[in-house]
Image (cartoon, rainbow, N blue to C red; front, side, top):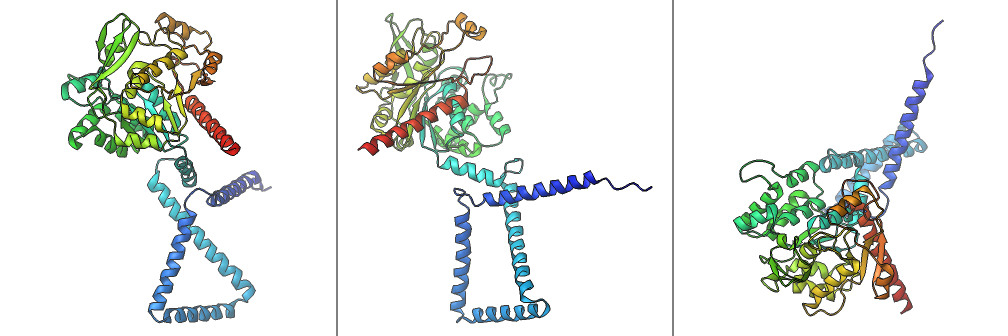
Length: 467
């Protein structure tokens, strides 16, 4: 007996073809969804072609139209002589639709290969995601250090209208060496923000963040710091170097230094001493009473002022209070722009205190330090009346490790702060996952910030409705 051909294999291939056809059909329908900014331009191009043809026909005394209609009539007569009209119409319609589908699919496939040859993301998905990002709120994030870059890496999932205003007071590490030896503004915090907002290939971003571990003169320097320093020398300013680097890394948003001045921080301590330099302030032997800078009243960049004026949300932090956040508030023009803005303003507090800088400070202590800094500039009103803090941290071995090093959780007495007029929001900002460090999680932090923004918009809509 002859064995019959195995049916399951044939059925499997048939099922796969059917699923593939359904999947292609769904992808085709998705091109009709709003917000892709494709259909309007395809229709515009079609209308332009039609109008251009009509113009050419009018210019030629309408003869091409007569010739075209006569040609179509002659062709249809010949076709209907072979097949009846009830068969010819559907057949020609089907051929036309197939040609349209073939042309469009091949065109978009070619564009997909050109734009993202190594990515699995479909072009329609990429366009839809980019459309959502382009419609996202204009967010200004102010700070420095790893806290600001952490926030930016999470926020870029929600909007491409991001502006990072970064402190340029760093005088330690690679940035400090370049600042002392070459007289440039410290590029370290700016480099971290550029890398956080980069959309380019991960390998290029890793190269930008690469730190040399050996080599006389190179050890300790990151490639991105050297790159920005070299570009600053070529272009004539750090601002121009940032713009050029943003193009290289396809940065989603913009990174702006808080000032163009060569700022050096100083701090007065509770014991009466005065210390200078960001790295020295971060290891202050006594609580900090007042912070200042030389030169006094450094100027702000116009791009930073414009971004704050057009912001839908302004966020300060997270980051080191006296060395990453408050230095930005030493720029009077930035403070004035924030005070004039009608956008909701949110302060994001750190998870842990920092030994030598914020020992013993709770959330209220952090807010008092910000208000004291603003008062020194003559600003009496509270600029940040809303605060985002972490929920109570559970006791773990990692937390005990931090305690042994002198760091403690930043306590938040939400009820007390609300009685003082603050809007307090608490969330699990560390992501709730076990790790080797207590830090803000980019996704959890960005989710909480965007929830605050949506709630603020809802409250504003209710107030406007009541008016």
